[in-house]
Amino acid sequence: MPDRLSALDASFLYMDQPTTPMHVGSVSIFRKPRSGFDYDGLVDLISNRIGLVPRYRQKIREVPGRMARPVWIDDVDFDVTYHVRRSALPSPGSDRALNELVARLMSRPLDHTRPLWEMYLVDGLSGGRVALVTKTHQAMVDGVASIDIGQVVLDDTADGRALGEEEWVARQEPSSWRLVYDAVGEAVARPGNAVEAARDAVRDAADTVTKVAGVAGGLFSAVRTAVRPAPVSPLNVPISTQRRFAMARTDLEDYRAVRRAHGGTINDVVLAVVAGALRNWLLSRGATVSPTTTMRAMVPLSVRGDTETTGSLAGAGLLGNQIASFLVDLPVGEPNAVLRMHHVAHAMREHRESGQSIGANALVRVGGFAPPTLHALGARAANGVARRLFNLVVSNVPGPQHALYAAGARMLEMYPVVPLAKGQSLAVGLTSYDGGVFYGFNADRDSMADVDELGELVTESLAELVATVPR
Image (cartoon, rainbow, N blue to C red; front, side):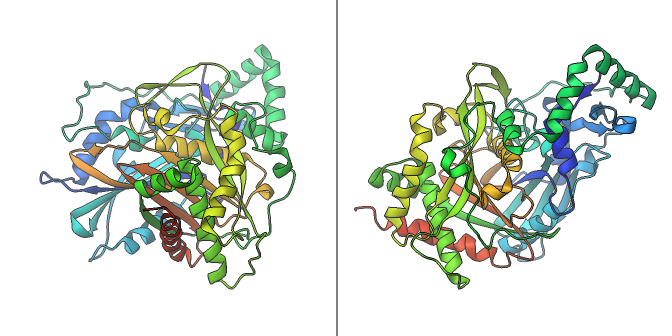
């Protein structure tokens, strides 16, 4: 029988529109080793390890007449050099030039006639650095057992790891009549599946996300928040097909110092920093900001499920890990940084006290480099929530606090690229890694010409909180 897409995965495939391409991305920056880090070496590395992610050699095939959901089939013409590409920045290789390249790459949808991923090796960065930019469609991220292609190239040491030789032979592509035959057979054998598929197609978006999260009743942090529409915000406008991208680098120890001084969690500090940055961004635009002004963030968080099911994530078990969506009203009208922090901590306390949340230490113990997969799962949850309920997505995923390597090149920084939803011009992703916290701002090109300024305001907002820490 064919490997058929779930109703949820198929919905992300159909949601792929020119203004809302449904891929998640990442930008990883490496220091080039003396031995070099070139395109041919990257192709060899991917070729050697792609067997760890079998889905990345498969493409999607529609069933004639859409009698059933599409199926995954082996790409008999799979060409790794189509998916692994190269680019270079003009001298002097500034971060601004890298941001512009990332924005253009993320604006282009993936080719649905091929496996739904791409990777770019970007040379020419200043200081002898190179970047890896990845794009993966959300239809491929079908649960916590999934691994992103960017994860399989990373190692804990510069020496890497040896993998056995793999002989892969693509299975023959099924004919159209075979797809129809299998679809009819499934409908006859399990008629309830057809009814369930129809229900999934029209089910309320919030219920769909409950299915993604797998935690009944855990979709929203408070019912009273969920039933109110999101505040009016300049972030919520019709968006174009083009994007802007910006980055911000911060120090994890600053967040720890604020947490020690004022309580709460690292995630509370992050949300307070984002709230402060959004406040100053609104003021820079001349917007009216009153003491009660808020912006609502959809915050994907890892939670523990009801059952202890083990899924392999980069070769290690992650027990019961699932993604739930929580709505948090960010107090952007509050001028005092410490009070903003307390407001956020209070809003998140209900989730923490439920006993369901998974701490950062538990997440980073899963092995490998899980953030790309967890950001992708968070993006799936965000796209399922009714978008009138929140203004922006803030996806925060902890990463390992030790150096990782690809083909001997040390990874210095890693920035997530969270996709935009309809009518939402900004998505914020951040990952902590090796002592740093790295923000990626994915924004609509037409309505967010000042996204670079927002990145600078994040560092200012963090500095404002750090200044309140007793010395």
